[in-house]
Structure formats: structure tokens, C-alpha cells
Length: 74
Picture (spheres, helix red, strand yellow):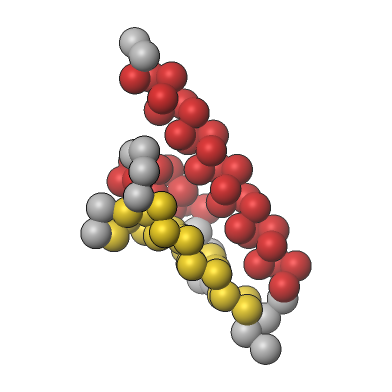
């Protein structure tokens, strides 16, 4: 069985965040900037790997967003 998740995020700085996430992309877990939105897709046969990958993407998106928001204040 193949498990898959697609996240579409259109707030904040999706283009910048997508560039920050790309170095961590794997064949089965990728992020990209598409139509003004950040799109993350994870496809795997292991549910645990899917859960961990989605959690990692969310943590990295949150950290990137926080850093960019802090920079905007200056």
C-alpha cells in the first residue's frame, strides 16, 4: 500500500521557504514552489516514514517562517 500526503501552503514566504527546504528533498519526499504556493508531497510505503517526513517538513516550515518574520521586523 502506498501512503501519500500533499500539503499546499500559500501564506508567508512560500518561494523562499521552498528554496530552504529543497536541499532536504528525497525521491519520495519533495517540496517545490508552484503557482505562488509551497507544495510538499510525500509518498511512501511506510506509514511511519510518512509521519516523520511530514513532521520534519512542518518543523522546518515553522522555523523558516519564524526567521523570515523576525527579519521583516528590522
